[in-house]
Image (cartoon, rainbow, N blue to C red):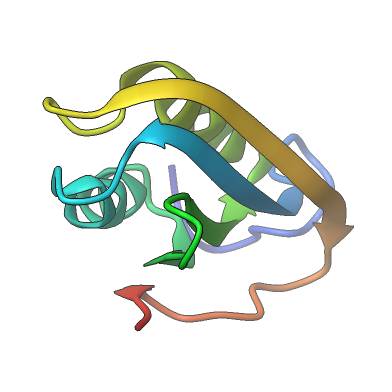
Length: 106
């Protein structure tokens, strides 16, 4: 798939979604694996730990790849993580990517 034309009509609609992952997701390399998976799927975004023990972030990219990431975030995660719940919010179509790269925030 070419990066040209992303965001134009033709099945390459861009989507942005916020996420929060609950369970044993801190201290298990969840952020590092989320970053790797996002880059592997060709997405942009960010991820960070919260004070309440969850992991939050945002991903943006082609809608079908964002859906793949949502499945990964809710069912797979890092090898040592135990995900009990994944919450997705503010899902919206975007005309162009608003972020660059995939970063861990602190």
